[in-house]
Length: 182
Image: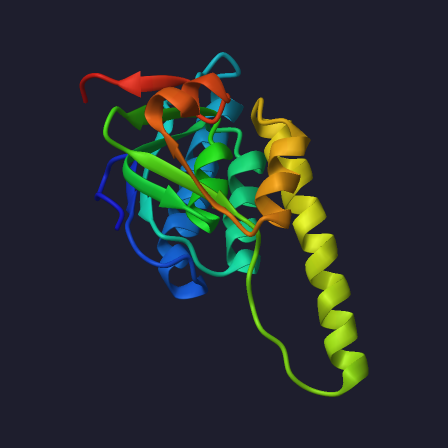
């Protein structure tokens, strides 16, 4: 949900194309508006977009779509977790230019999951694509946090759902600050 005439976005559903369309559009529109102002005033500093995430996760390709927009955004996008940001929600959360978490929130990282069917060759190709996706996700997490690659490999190999509380999120560099007021 996008609050009209503000830069506050609320994402509280499954990560899928339909659910993210409004969020993606809002980020694009804020950037376009800021670019117009920046052309007239090169010293203009864009107020940030505030993206509140409360999601159990969802589809990886749609997740990368939103992450790509956040990374390309000249307007800073601050992410907030006040409840939970899990799986794809975790990945979106750590993509913020600044990241905030409430003391009661938790985030969760795990290996990607899915299913496949078809011929042997098609399933083999799907497995290889999933292996590359997992590697890409691990590289992204290590580039955005202080989580050691060894910990991510342990999560993958042991098939763990790794729940991270607010204090750990700060320690591992997943969040920048614990929210004390809004």
